Amino acid sequence: MVSAAGSAAAQGGDALYELVDAATERLQTADAVAASKWVNGGPITDPVRAQQVLTAVSVDAQSSGVPTDYVTELFTDQINATEAIQYSRFSWWKLDPSAGPTAAPDLAASRAQIDRLNRRMVDEIAQQWPVLQSADCPAALDTAKSAVTGARGLDPLYRQALDAATRSYCQP
Image (cartoon, rainbow, N blue to C red; front, side):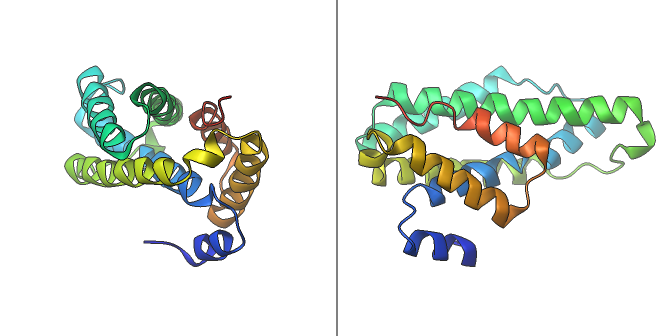
């Protein structure tokens, strides 16, 4: 589902807006995932789940005609940024246990949302492949990140996580 801000940006010619918006929406699942792991005592880093995600996006990339190594690198950055947000939340809750969640969101629902966003991101990567491989990519990426940051009202942690999650998008 495209937000009104997303539609306006896409109509304005901002080719990478939808990709960056999906990456941001995926980052925003970190709070619910962290809360679930906090309440249930699960580890933040889940190598088995990370490998499942990387395998799935590689298959999607291959069927979309996008190099799997490129997609694997992008999603590794995305996973690392998401984990960093979770570590930040855990740190805060350890310093102030009263601020921690008391109920666990449904981790399966969060993972289903993440899987949908992953497919959306791979679709956007395939559609925007020429832009992602162009000399104009850094400027287009900066424009998209600025627009998404404003539209979603990202705080400094999420802005930093978005920078980390998108750091490999533009490759010569």
